[in-house]
Amino acid sequence: MGVVTNSWQIKNSQPDKTRLLRKASTTFLITAMILMSLSAAALFFYTKALLRSEIDEELYSNKDRVERLLIQDQTIKGIPPIMEVELAPRAEPLTLNDTLIYDPLQDEVELFEQLSETKEINGQHYRITVRAMVIESEDILFAIVFTFIAIIFLAFVFLFYLNKSRNEKLWKPFFVNLERIKNFSIKSGDPITFVDSEILEFHELNREMESLTKKIQIDYRNLKQFTEDVSHEMQTPLAIMQAKIDTLINDEHLTEEQFTKFSSLQEDIQRLKQLNKKLILLAKIDNNQFTATSPIFFNQLIEESVVNFRDLTSVPIQIKQDKSLKVEMDRSLAFVLINNLISNAVKHSTEEYPIEIKILDDRLQVQNHGTFALAKPDQIFKRFYKESEHQDSTGLGLSIVKKICDYYGFIPSYRFRESEHIFTISFQNPTLDSL
Image (cartoon, rainbow, N blue to C red; front, side, top):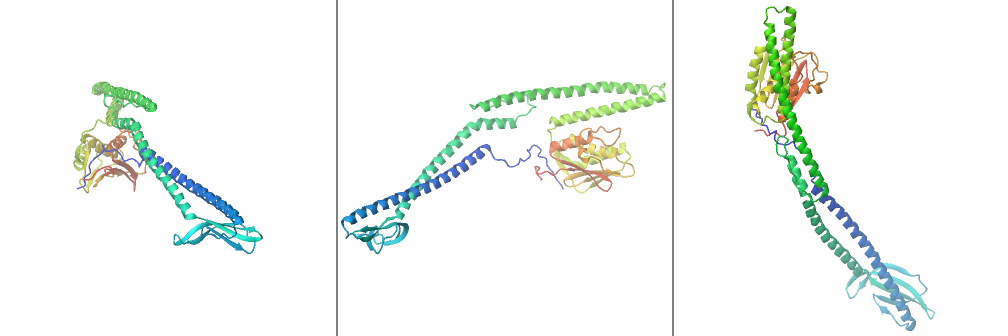
């Protein structure tokens, strides 16, 4: 058995959106990470260049000291691998480069920055080479950068949670008020109240929202009262007019021409009464006055409606039942939905072709014969839209069908295929739960 339950109370799923605080925190996080990375890179290269400059300055200073000592004592040989003095066959240009040299104290090959230049003393060329270990400077460099990153990271974590906590406190009244707006109903007589905030913009927003919702409630009550008053006041004069016309029609002195005019007037009054009832029904649906729901077996309701229509029309009506269809909705609206679909098919059918009602597991189809497709099928469910000149048509039947479907989350559709007008109501909805 095909079973469909209604969960029209469940709100339609919204597209994926990011919460305000998460968006702000993510922006803060990304910005801080980029700034921290750029700052760390800038500090690394600046400190590296500074250490290199200090090493070069130290090498030049040590070379000058060795030159002064060598002028006083040419027997100096140096202190390998930090300093070396040796004879050179000729003058050599100054060179500054990195080199790998075995350090006997460390018992391993180390990276040194080396400065080498010849010095002429007493007609003899001496090659003076001074070196400084690069590894130690790089250790200092990485220690500085690591310390900087650690301090910045800890400061960032502190500021991140401080900023998050502060934002949550600042935005809390906004989120509380937003939830109250979601739960607000214009049908309620109680005015909505908002949590005040120390933020001026939030305070002004609350004040405007309170004024707006109060005005909406007043307008709603006035409009509802006006609709009820108009519908109630129209019933009595229409009934009186119809009764007087019935009396005149039954007058034996009434001429044929007068009878025709009064009959036409009576039909117009009847159409006006139907129009009034349908407009009242639309207003009630808009005002959410059909809150009572129960399991409705459409197969049974359709059979009852078809029996009534067979007494009113000679157009054959056929029911094809593949499954048993059960829907959670208001029983009176279910009757209106079925009757309007069948009534629309009856009005636009001929006796030569039967109306077919198909009950499927999750949808209902009503189809009748037609010679051509509708000119504007997208307008068919709008109020007062008519393509036929049928006198009994008010142009509200299908709009009521659409309103009921929207109210419960059903999907109405129309198509023309092989000389058949096919109206389909799909009860299967992503927001509905299937039993």
